[in-house]
Image (cartoon, rainbow, N blue to C red; front, side, top):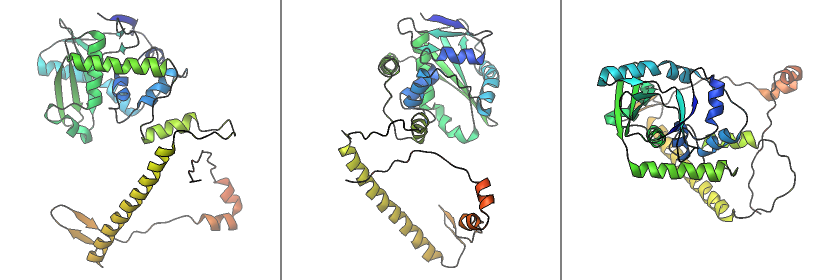
Length: 310
C-alpha cells in the first residue's frame, strides 16, 4: 500500500511544486530513463536540488489542466467506467522518494487514469494503440507507487480524436524503473552528483545557465578526455565530409534545373527561386551613426568553448 504525503485540496500551485521537490514524480520517470524528448536527467536533477520554486506555466500547460476534466469525462463515456479524483500526493511505502500525483482513480478498482491532450501534429505518436515512451514510464511509475493492478491513459487529440489505452502491470518493468529512479535519487540527487550529459540542446542550456560565469581563472590539468577529444576530431571531419556531400547533391540539382524555378516528381517538389532579403549594414551604421548603433546594441555575455590541439 502507498502512503499519503499531503492532501492537495486547497494546496496552492507553489506549495504543490515544493512538495514535488521531495521526491520523483511520474513526469520525472521518463526523463530519468532518457525517454522524454522535452526533459533530461540533468534537468530533473537541477530541479530537485534547487531551493528556488520556478513557476513555469505556459498556454499548453494551462490547457492541459483545464481539459483534464474533459478527458476524464470522455473516458467515462467511452468505457462506462467511473472515476474519482485522488486529491493527494502519494508516496511509495518502501521507497518514500517515489511520489505520485495521479489524475484519477477508478471507482471500486485499484487502477488509475492518466489524462493527456495532444496537438494534431502528435497524432501519429498515438496511432494503433501506441503510447509515447515517456508517458508509458509515467504510468508504470504510478503503478509502482500506488501498487496498482493496471493504468489507463486517455488522450484528446485536439480537434481530431479521442483515444484510450489500458496498460497492464508488468513486474519486470516496474522493478527496473524503481531501480533506475532509486539509483538516480540516491547517487545523484542526495549526493549532489550531476548526471551525465546526453548531448541535447536542453542540456547545453542547463550547463550554460548554471555555469555561465567562471569564478576561477586557474588552469586545470585536463585528465581523462584524450580519447573523447580524438573522437570529437574524427566526428568534425566526418561531419565536414557529409556537409560537402550534401552540398554536391544540391549543386547537381541546381545544374539540372538551370534557369527553371520548379522541379517535381512523385516524391519531391523542389523550388529554386529568387529571394529578396534586407540586411542591416551594421559596419556602416557603426561608422556613420555611432550614437544610434550604441543605443540599439545589445551586449551578450557567454562562455565560449574553444578546443585546440596542443
